[in-house]
Image 1 (cartoon, rainbow, N blue to C red):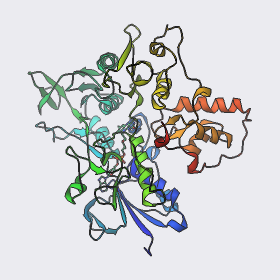
Image 2: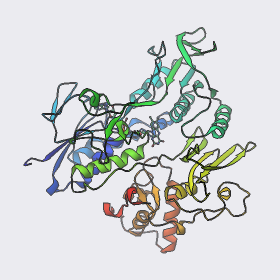
Image 3: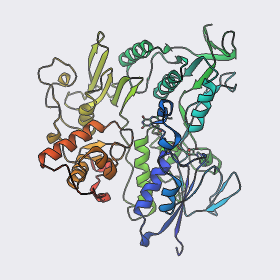
Image 4: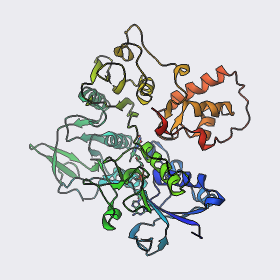
Length: 502
Ligand SMILES: Cc1cc2nc3c(=O)[nH]c(=O)nc-3n(C[C@H](O)[C@H](O)[C@H](O)COP(=O)(O)OP(=O)(O)OC[C@H]3O[C@@H](n4cnc5c(N)ncnc54)[C@H](O)[C@@H]3O)c2cc1C
C-alpha cells in the first residue's frame, strides 16, 4: 500500500472515541494511518456513563470526552451530524445521509445501541421519551417543565437512573417494571426486595409485575397508562428504559453476519465477517454475547486498534468482567460475577439485616474456596475486597462467611501488600496494581496524577478507593516526598492486558 492506511470510524460514542485515542497513540511514521471519525450525533464523544449528572448541574461541555481542538491536534478528521447510511464493501467506501463519500482501507463500526421501546399502543405520543443521548436529556428537561408526574417504564439499572433524573426535575416519580423485582440482571431476589423498599422510601413509587397494555388520554394528567389486569396510572411524561438493542442496521443491510437476536458478529480480533470491517462496543456480538458496559468496549477498542496496525496481530479479546458498583439515589448496589449463583453446585452465603437495610450475598465454588459472585445492597464497603478475590481468582484463606458477616471472628480483608502485582484494579482501562505503583514511583503521588498517567478511575470510577489505597501504600512504603517531578506517561508495555491474567 503506497498511501496512508485510511481508517474510518462510524460512531463517536465512548467506545468509538476510545478507539481513536488508542490508534492515535499507536500511530508512528512507519505505520502511518489517517483516521476519520463520522459521528451521527451533533457533537463529539461525551461521557454517557455519567449522563445523569446533567440533571445535577453538569453541562454538555462538562460531559465532553474530547473536543475539536484535541482531534485536530491528533490529526483526526471528524464530521458531526454524519450518519452513515451506505457501505460499498467492494469499493471500500461509506456514504453519509448527506451524500458525502469516504474511502476506507479499514472500517470500524462503533455504532453502539439504542433504547428499546416496547410496541405499546400510544408509545409514539409527545412526551413519551427515551434516555440515551444529550439530545434526549434536553427533551426530558423540556417535557418536565410542563409536567407534574413522570413514569419510567423499566426497573433496571438505567431505568432507576432515569427515575432519579425525573425526581431531580421535581416530578412525582413512578417506576413500572414488568418483572417481579428491580435490577433483575444484577441482583438476586433478596437484593431486589431490599432495593425496592429503599427506593420506595426515597419517594419513588415502584410498581413491579406490571405489564403496560396501552397509553391513552388521561383525566388528571396528560396520559393514562392501562395495565394488564385493569389497573391504571396517570402521568404527564413517560420514559422508556426497557433495555437496549444494538445498532446493527448497517451490518444487516450490507450483508455482514449478525446474531440471531442482533449484534454484529465479531471474532477475537473484533473483525466482522468482512476482514476489513471491525465492530466494537455495544453494537458488537462476541461469542454470542453483547456487553452493555463500557469496560469491555474499551478492551475491544484497544484490540481493534492494535490489530489494524497489524504489528500486534496476536492480541485477542477474551471476554470481560461485568461486575458493577453504583449508587442509585443514594442506595449502594454492587454486583459481582455470578450474582445469581447459576454455576452448577455453587454455594451461597446470605447476610440479610432487615433492620439496618443491608443485604449481602456471596457465591462460591462447590468447595467454598473461590469467590465466583456477590450481591450487595445498602452497603458496598466489601465490594473492592470481594472483587479482588473474584477478578484475580484468589483462594479464600478463611471461611467464606467471614467475608460478609460483620460478627464473624476472622474477617478476611486482602491487604494492599498481599495483592499480586498483576491484580486488576481498574477493569475499564485494564490497569493493574503494578502499573499504578509504577506511576506513583514515576511521580504521580495522588489520585489526579495516577488518573492522568494510567487512566485508572476515569471509566465507571468504581475502583477509586482501591486506587487511593495503593497510592497511599506505595507512598508510605517508599517514603516518597509529596513534591515530585511531573509524572511521565507510562509506555503501553507497562500495562498488563487482562488477557494475561489467570
Ligand atoms: C444513563 C446511562 C448510564 C450508564 N451507566 C453505565 C455504568 O455505570 N457503567 C458502564 O459500564 N456503562 C454504563 N452505561 C453504558 C455505557 O454508556 C455504554 O456501554 C457505552 O456508552 C457504549 O459505548 P459505544 O460507543 O459502544 O456506544 P454509544 O455510546 O451508544 O455510541 C455510539 C454512537 O454511534 C452513533 N451512531 C450510530 N449509528 C451511526 C451511524 N450509522 N453513523 C454514524 N454514527 C452512528 C450513535 O449516534 C452514538 O453516538 C450507561 C449508559 C447510559 C445511557
